Length: 89
Image 1 (cartoon, rainbow, N blue to C red):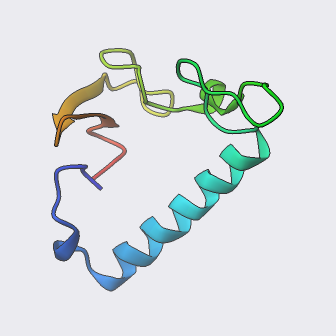
Image 2: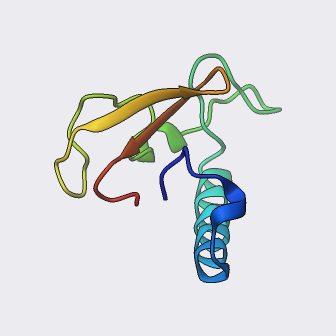
C-alpha cells in the first residue's frame, strides 16, 4: 500500500494483510536486536542488526530488491518515507 494512502480507505482484507506484515517485521526486528540507524544501543550497549534487512528504508533512488524499480522517497508529516511504487500498491 502506498504510504500516502489514508488509513480509513483500507478495506478489511487490506488492513488484515498490513497488520500481519507489521507484526512479522517487528518480530524480525526484535529478534535482531532492533534497528540501529545512528546511535541506538540496547540495555547492554550493543547495536541492533535489523538495518541490514531493511528492504527500502534509506535506499531512495536505488533499485528495489524485489523488482528493480527505483525506490521512492518522500516526506510525510516531517518523516522520511521510502517505498517501491511497483511492489507497494
